[in-house]
Image (cartoon, rainbow, N blue to C red; front, top):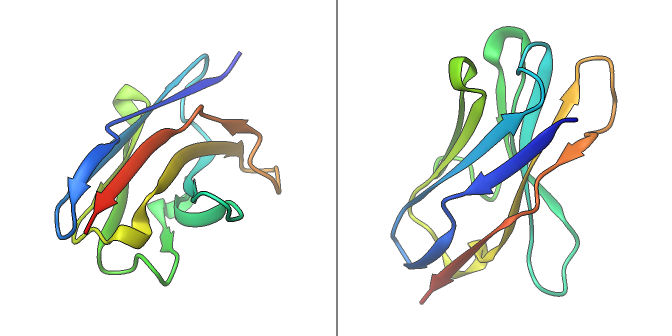
Length: 119
């Protein structure tokens, strides 16, 4: 059974930084695309960043480009999200997700980690 566990959330002042981690157990990263999503109170869940298996390609939501960086360490089955220049509007529960290459949808999700940015 595949399990994803996020860590690294917390409270930070605007302009600060946090690094989230997503540990994967139950299988390896091999042939999996991984991504980060977030959901703020009263809002729909939204895409934040993705790290593709093929070529290590990354993509970002416009709202985080230039501030967030997604990376993965395949040897330890962990994905990271480095978040810099945080803004109050980045406050949300952050979720990591994974899917096999052949799947169109993200099949596996973590439980989420809270990020709160104070002004």
